Length: 95
Image (cartoon, rainbow, N blue to C red; front, side):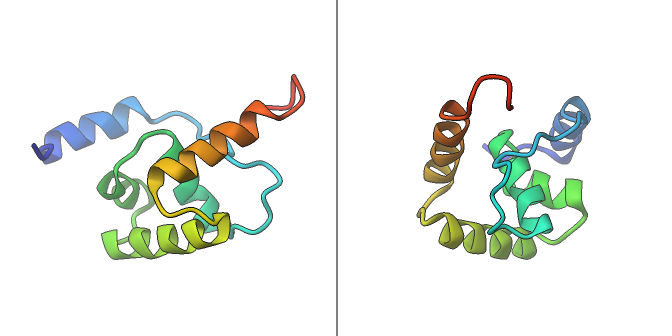
């Protein structure tokens, strides 16, 4: 079931918090790709990312294709898993 625009707006408002840097020190990603990836790891849908960053859905899709290629993954789940593994192996106090 697709979310209505009102529901999407409410999600965006409830998530209107500072976005963490998902892969600190991951220099392969451009600044915009990092922004898109940070929102992806927070659980935002592609349309929510596009609304939040004020870019088109197609642009979000293109950024994600580049991110997946750079991270050598094939899906959103693999990308988030890689982020979680990276975070889990960081020394304590460096998140």
